[in-house]
Length: 545
Image (cartoon, rainbow, N blue to C red; front, top):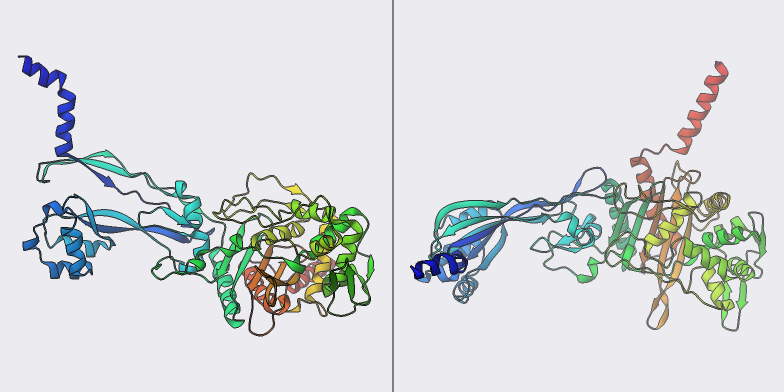
C-alpha cells in the first residue's frame, strides 16, 4: 500500500514528466510571414510554402538505403549524405536539405526510408528582384529579417508559430493522432510608400547612367512633396535577393541612406535661403565676383569657372558662383547658415527607422574661421546622404514646411509640420532655381518637356584617406517639378564617373530629366502647355457666355 501511495501520489508528477519525455513529441507549425506591398498593393516580398527534409540518424539503416536514388532526389552527393546521416549518430535531428518544393519533398518521402521525415516551412520570395532589394532587404533561411525593412520591421512581419502534440512509442512510431495545441498566427502585412512603377523607371535610368559613364555606383531618391513619402529609392550596384550565392557584400548597402558625400553646390540654394532670412539680402541683391576668384585666408582661393562680373541672386545659382556665395556667407556669418542646415535635417538621421542609416556630418564650431564659413556655404566640409538632400529640397518645394521622411504609405499621418523657412523665401529661391535648367544655366539637361523644373547641379572632388582626389568626382543633381507647384523632389548622385564628362549637369541631370518626366506622367500631372490651353479655353467660354 505504501508503494502504491509513493507511485501515485508522491512521485506522480515526476513519473508523468519522465514518461512524457519518452513518448510525447511536439511538432512546430510554421507561421506565414507578412507580405510587403508597394503603395499600390503590388507584392514585393511573399512567403511560399516549401518542404525541408530531415533525418534521425539513430533510425537510419545504412545497409538498406538507396543512396544513389536519394542523392539524385536531393541533388546532393552521396559523400555528403553519408556524412550527415552516419556521422551524427548521437543526434536525433539533422537537416538534409531545406526549402524544397512540395513536389520535390514528396518525391523524397515516397522512397519510404526509415528515419527520413519532412517539415512544412515557408521561404521568402521577392518578385521585384534587385529593383527594390536595397529597400526591402531579405531574410535568412529561418525567415528572420537580415537586411532592409525585413530587418527593421521583423517583429511586425514575423508570425507566431503554432504546435501540435503527438504520442509516440520508444521507436518513434505514432500511437495517437496529433492534437492541436496552438494555432499558427500569420505575421502582419506592411505597405510601403514606394511606387513600383517609379521604382522600375528610376532603377533602369540609374543603371544605364552608371554603365554609360563607367561609374563606381550611384543613388537616386524620388519623394512626394505633399506627404514626405519616398516614391522610389534605387542604388547601383544592386543584388538579387532571390539568389545570394555569389553576392558581393558591398552591393548590399542602401547607399541612398548609408553612404555620405559632400553635397557641393547643391546646398547653395539653402545658403541663399539663410541669407534671405536674415533680411540683409533679397532677390534683387547683387554681388561683384570680379575677377572670378577670391582669396579667403592664407590657404583658400575660391574660384569660379570664369569672371562673371556683377551677378544677381538668380545668376549666382544659374552660373553656380562660388565667389558670390562665399562673399554672402562671410557677410552674414556661418551661424545662420549652419542653423538653417540643421533645421532642414542635415547632420541628422531622417528617423525613417531604416537599419544602418547614416546621420551625415554637420560640424558645429564655437568659432568659425573664414575658410570654414566659405566652404560651408558651397557644400564642402559637411556630408549628407541622398535622402537627407532630398528631404531638405522638399522643404523648399513645400513653401518652407518640413515634414518627416517616411518609407511607409500614410506614414506621416500623425506628423506635425514645422515651418522652418518663410513661404516667401522658399518661393523666391524656388523661382530662381528655374534659371539653372534654362539656357545659360549649368543644368540645362535636367529640363523636362512640358513641365517647369527647379534644381541645382553639384560636382565635388571625392574624399579619401589621403584627402581630396584630383581626378575623382561625385556628380549630383537635386531638383523639383513642376517648379510653380512641386509634386516631386528628386536627387541623383553618380559616384566617380570615369567616361566622358564628370559635371553634375552632364552626368546626373539627364537621369533626373528622364525619371521626372516619366514619374509626372505616371502620377497624372498635367503638362504646363495643356494647363495653359485649358485655361484659355475656359476664359473663352466665360467671354462667350
